[in-house]
Length: 107
Image 1 (cartoon, rainbow, N blue to C red):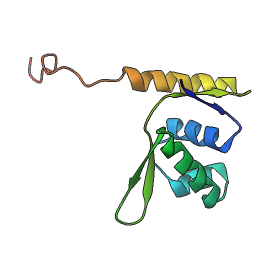
Image 2 (cartoon, rainbow, N blue to C red):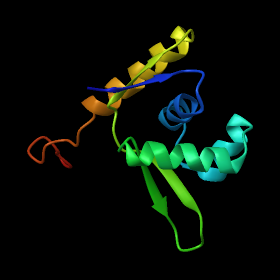
Image 3 (cartoon, rainbow, N blue to C red):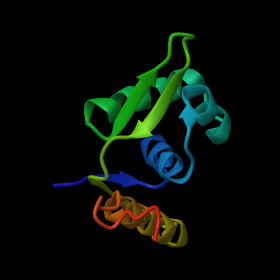
């Protein structure tokens, strides 16, 4: 069963942002959403525990946030934004690498 998020909640806004923009750091998300880094960090950790967000820490201390699963839906008023997100999620799920047999370099 997919997780359901309100589009006005911080977790919902973070998921919408991660679908729309990549690469993102924790600081980027805080800046985009004009929210404290502490609140973003708490929400990111919650989403990571649910398996929806992946965290990629780098040696320099920067942590990138990635989408780990598309097992979520939204509720809320922002239907146009939701349509775009659903289209992007569908494209990500349909994307695949070309078969080696069809990958012709020279004709």
